[in-house]
Length: 230
Image (tube, rainbow, N blue to C red; front, top):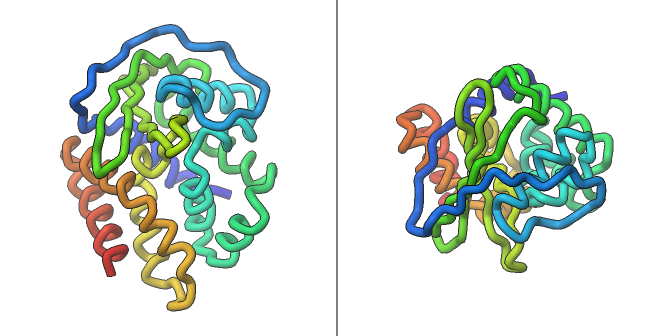
Protein backbone atom coordinates (compact mmCIF):
# COMPACT_ATOMS: atom_id res chain seq x y z
CA UNK A 1 0.00 0.00 0.00
CA UNK A 2 1.30 3.45 -0.86
CA UNK A 3 2.04 5.88 1.93
CA UNK A 4 -0.64 8.55 2.45
CA UNK A 5 2.03 11.10 3.38
CA UNK A 6 3.75 10.39 0.07
CA UNK A 7 0.65 11.36 -1.88
CA UNK A 8 0.43 14.65 -0.04
CA UNK A 9 3.91 15.47 -1.31
CA UNK A 10 3.03 14.16 -4.78
CA UNK A 11 0.13 16.52 -5.07
CA UNK A 12 2.45 19.39 -4.12
CA UNK A 13 4.67 18.30 -7.00
CA UNK A 14 1.89 18.38 -9.55
CA UNK A 15 1.19 21.98 -8.60
CA UNK A 16 4.78 23.07 -9.29
CA UNK A 17 4.98 25.62 -12.10
CA UNK A 18 6.51 24.71 -15.44
CA UNK A 19 9.80 25.61 -17.03
CA UNK A 20 8.24 26.73 -20.33
CA UNK A 21 9.60 26.36 -23.81
CA UNK A 22 10.05 27.86 -27.22
CA UNK A 23 7.08 26.31 -29.04
CA UNK A 24 3.67 27.92 -29.17
CA UNK A 25 1.11 26.47 -26.81
CA UNK A 26 -2.13 24.98 -28.04
CA UNK A 27 -4.87 25.80 -25.55
CA UNK A 28 -8.11 23.94 -25.77
CA UNK A 29 -11.01 23.07 -23.53
CA UNK A 30 -12.24 20.15 -25.62
CA UNK A 31 -11.69 16.97 -23.60
CA UNK A 32 -12.50 13.64 -25.26
CA UNK A 33 -14.98 11.36 -23.53
CA UNK A 34 -13.73 8.52 -21.33
CA UNK A 35 -12.36 5.50 -23.10
CA UNK A 36 -12.75 1.88 -22.01
CA UNK A 37 -10.23 0.34 -24.39
CA UNK A 38 -6.53 -0.16 -23.89
CA UNK A 39 -4.33 2.25 -25.82
CA UNK A 40 -0.65 3.08 -26.01
CA UNK A 41 0.31 6.72 -25.65
CA UNK A 42 -1.49 9.60 -27.31
CA UNK A 43 -1.07 11.48 -30.57
CA UNK A 44 -0.65 14.75 -28.65
CA UNK A 45 0.37 15.59 -25.08
CA UNK A 46 -3.17 16.73 -24.34
CA UNK A 47 -4.58 13.45 -25.68
CA UNK A 48 -2.21 11.39 -23.49
CA UNK A 49 -3.01 13.28 -20.30
CA UNK A 50 -6.73 13.28 -21.11
CA UNK A 51 -6.69 9.50 -21.61
CA UNK A 52 -4.77 9.06 -18.36
CA UNK A 53 -7.15 11.15 -16.25
CA UNK A 54 -10.22 9.67 -17.95
CA UNK A 55 -8.94 6.16 -17.26
CA UNK A 56 -8.35 6.95 -13.59
CA UNK A 57 -11.78 8.55 -13.25
CA UNK A 58 -13.59 5.38 -14.40
CA UNK A 59 -11.19 2.80 -12.97
CA UNK A 60 -9.76 1.62 -16.31
CA UNK A 61 -6.31 1.13 -14.86
CA UNK A 62 -4.82 -0.86 -17.78
CA UNK A 63 -5.49 2.21 -19.93
CA UNK A 64 -3.72 4.40 -17.37
CA UNK A 65 -0.77 1.98 -17.48
CA UNK A 66 -0.62 2.35 -21.26
CA UNK A 67 -0.30 6.14 -21.35
CA UNK A 68 2.54 6.56 -18.85
CA UNK A 69 6.24 5.86 -19.42
CA UNK A 70 6.42 2.14 -18.59
CA UNK A 71 9.97 2.12 -17.24
CA UNK A 72 9.19 5.02 -14.92
CA UNK A 73 6.05 3.27 -13.67
CA UNK A 74 8.04 0.14 -12.81
CA UNK A 75 10.70 2.18 -11.00
CA UNK A 76 8.08 3.98 -8.92
CA UNK A 77 6.39 0.75 -7.91
CA UNK A 78 9.69 -0.85 -6.95
CA UNK A 79 11.12 2.07 -4.99
CA UNK A 80 8.01 2.31 -2.83
CA UNK A 81 9.06 -0.99 -1.20
CA UNK A 82 12.84 -0.46 -1.70
CA UNK A 83 12.82 -3.83 -3.44
CA UNK A 84 15.23 -5.01 -6.12
CA UNK A 85 13.30 -8.28 -6.25
CA UNK A 86 10.04 -6.46 -7.00
CA UNK A 87 11.78 -4.47 -9.73
CA UNK A 88 13.04 -7.67 -11.34
CA UNK A 89 9.62 -9.32 -11.04
CA UNK A 90 7.92 -6.34 -12.68
CA UNK A 91 10.48 -6.30 -15.50
CA UNK A 92 10.16 -10.02 -16.18
CA UNK A 93 6.46 -10.51 -15.54
CA UNK A 94 4.92 -7.09 -16.05
CA UNK A 95 2.69 -5.08 -13.72
CA UNK A 96 -0.18 -7.18 -12.43
CA UNK A 97 -3.72 -5.73 -12.44
CA UNK A 98 -3.77 -5.86 -8.65
CA UNK A 99 -0.57 -3.83 -8.27
CA UNK A 100 -1.73 -1.34 -10.88
CA UNK A 101 -5.13 -0.92 -9.23
CA UNK A 102 -3.60 -0.32 -5.77
CA UNK A 103 -1.22 2.30 -7.12
CA UNK A 104 -3.78 4.26 -9.14
CA UNK A 105 -6.53 4.07 -6.54
CA UNK A 106 -4.12 5.58 -4.01
CA UNK A 107 -3.17 8.23 -6.54
CA UNK A 108 -6.81 9.20 -7.17
CA UNK A 109 -7.44 9.36 -3.43
CA UNK A 110 -4.44 11.64 -3.07
CA UNK A 111 -5.84 14.02 -5.66
CA UNK A 112 -9.12 14.22 -3.76
CA UNK A 113 -7.38 14.71 -0.41
CA UNK A 114 -5.01 17.45 -1.54
CA UNK A 115 -7.01 19.41 -4.10
CA UNK A 116 -10.51 18.88 -2.76
CA UNK A 117 -11.46 17.72 -6.25
CA UNK A 118 -12.26 14.34 -7.67
CA UNK A 119 -10.29 13.24 -10.74
CA UNK A 120 -13.47 13.85 -12.74
CA UNK A 121 -13.45 17.52 -11.67
CA UNK A 122 -10.00 18.27 -13.11
CA UNK A 123 -10.38 20.31 -16.29
CA UNK A 124 -7.61 20.32 -18.91
CA UNK A 125 -7.05 23.69 -20.56
CA UNK A 126 -4.05 23.40 -22.89
CA UNK A 127 -0.52 22.23 -23.63
CA UNK A 128 2.85 23.89 -24.10
CA UNK A 129 5.56 21.92 -25.89
CA UNK A 130 9.27 22.45 -25.31
CA UNK A 131 12.59 20.76 -25.97
CA UNK A 132 14.97 19.96 -23.13
CA UNK A 133 17.98 17.67 -22.72
CA UNK A 134 17.53 16.22 -26.19
CA UNK A 135 13.87 15.25 -25.69
CA UNK A 136 10.49 16.69 -26.61
CA UNK A 137 8.35 17.49 -23.59
CA UNK A 138 5.07 19.27 -22.99
CA UNK A 139 3.38 20.80 -19.98
CA UNK A 140 -0.35 20.07 -19.95
CA UNK A 141 -2.19 22.57 -17.80
CA UNK A 142 -5.38 21.93 -15.89
CA UNK A 143 -7.54 23.58 -13.28
CA UNK A 144 -9.11 22.27 -10.09
CA UNK A 145 -10.92 23.85 -7.13
CA UNK A 146 -7.50 24.35 -5.47
CA UNK A 147 -5.87 26.09 -8.44
CA UNK A 148 -3.81 25.30 -11.51
CA UNK A 149 -2.19 21.93 -12.11
CA UNK A 150 0.54 20.86 -14.53
CA UNK A 151 1.26 17.36 -15.84
CA UNK A 152 4.38 16.80 -17.96
CA UNK A 153 4.29 14.58 -21.04
CA UNK A 154 7.18 13.27 -23.14
CA UNK A 155 7.36 12.18 -26.78
CA UNK A 156 8.69 8.66 -27.34
CA UNK A 157 10.65 7.44 -30.38
CA UNK A 158 7.37 6.10 -31.82
CA UNK A 159 6.19 9.74 -31.90
CA UNK A 160 3.45 9.02 -29.37
CA UNK A 161 3.16 11.09 -26.19
CA UNK A 162 3.15 9.63 -22.68
CA UNK A 163 2.58 11.02 -19.21
CA UNK A 164 6.05 11.58 -17.75
CA UNK A 165 5.68 10.52 -14.13
CA UNK A 166 9.23 11.42 -13.14
CA UNK A 167 9.19 14.88 -14.73
CA UNK A 168 5.87 15.54 -12.98
CA UNK A 169 6.41 13.80 -9.64
CA UNK A 170 10.21 13.77 -9.43
CA UNK A 171 10.23 16.03 -6.35
CA UNK A 172 8.11 13.43 -4.54
CA UNK A 173 10.08 10.38 -5.57
CA UNK A 174 13.68 11.66 -5.29
CA UNK A 175 13.64 11.29 -1.46
CA UNK A 176 12.77 7.63 -2.01
CA UNK A 177 15.15 6.99 -4.90
CA UNK A 178 18.19 8.49 -3.16
CA UNK A 179 18.38 6.00 -0.24
CA UNK A 180 17.31 3.18 -2.57
CA UNK A 181 20.21 3.84 -4.93
CA UNK A 182 22.58 4.03 -1.95
CA UNK A 183 21.40 0.62 -0.72
CA UNK A 184 21.34 -1.20 -4.05
CA UNK A 185 23.77 -4.13 -4.20
CA UNK A 186 26.68 -3.59 -6.56
CA UNK A 187 25.36 -6.27 -8.88
CA UNK A 188 21.90 -4.65 -9.12
CA UNK A 189 22.62 -2.80 -12.35
CA UNK A 190 19.08 -2.87 -13.72
CA UNK A 191 17.49 -0.18 -11.51
CA UNK A 192 20.51 2.12 -11.80
CA UNK A 193 20.60 1.82 -15.58
CA UNK A 194 16.84 2.37 -15.81
CA UNK A 195 17.06 5.53 -13.72
CA UNK A 196 19.98 6.74 -15.83
CA UNK A 197 17.87 6.29 -18.98
CA UNK A 198 15.29 8.59 -17.40
CA UNK A 199 17.83 11.33 -16.70
CA UNK A 200 16.22 13.93 -19.04
CA UNK A 201 12.94 13.59 -17.16
CA UNK A 202 14.69 13.97 -13.80
CA UNK A 203 16.50 17.05 -15.08
CA UNK A 204 13.20 18.59 -16.17
CA UNK A 205 11.79 17.82 -12.70
CA UNK A 206 14.79 19.54 -11.11
CA UNK A 207 14.41 22.61 -13.33
CA UNK A 208 10.70 22.87 -12.57
CA UNK A 209 11.39 22.64 -8.84
CA UNK A 210 14.07 25.33 -9.12
CA UNK A 211 11.75 27.61 -11.09
CA UNK A 212 9.08 27.16 -8.42
CA UNK A 213 11.52 28.00 -5.61
CA UNK A 214 11.20 24.50 -4.15
CA UNK A 215 14.78 24.35 -2.91
CA UNK A 216 14.48 21.14 -0.91
CA UNK A 217 13.00 19.29 -3.88
CA UNK A 218 15.65 20.71 -6.20
CA UNK A 219 18.40 19.54 -3.84
CA UNK A 220 16.94 16.03 -3.63
CA UNK A 221 16.84 15.80 -7.42
CA UNK A 222 20.38 17.14 -7.73
CA UNK A 223 21.46 14.46 -5.27
CA UNK A 224 19.80 11.75 -7.34
CA UNK A 225 21.38 13.02 -10.56
CA UNK A 226 24.79 13.06 -8.85
CA UNK A 227 24.29 9.46 -7.71
CA UNK A 228 23.49 8.43 -11.26
CA UNK A 229 26.71 10.06 -12.44
CA UNK A 230 28.63 7.82 -10.08
